[in-house]
Image (tube, rainbow, N blue to C red; front, side, top):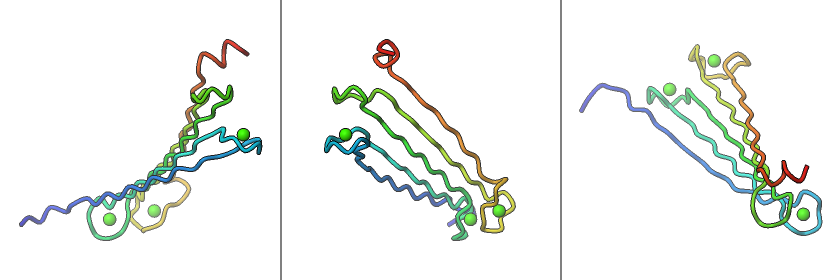
Length: 104
Ligand SMILES: [Ca+2]
Ligand SMILES: [Ca+2]
Ligand SMILES: [Ca+2]
């Protein structure tokens, strides 16, 4: 037994298949991972991180050509149980495969 608070981490991943142009063939796979962290174990979530990764198959060869990743990190700095604007950070990354770059 110890008095050290234990962090509780909950992670949820959802996968979605998207037909962007509506031709019946899946063009993109979107994966959403949400991580909730209760750092001090008091039952109130202190950190929420959500990453949305979308992989696009633009050339239709079954391999992802463009990967878009957006990460939203919210940290309840002042501990009021709410995430205000200054406690939320958004980071966006886009990766494009050489195949697409070469073809223009
Ligand atoms: Ca399609
Ligand atoms: Ca907490
Ligand atoms: Ca807050």
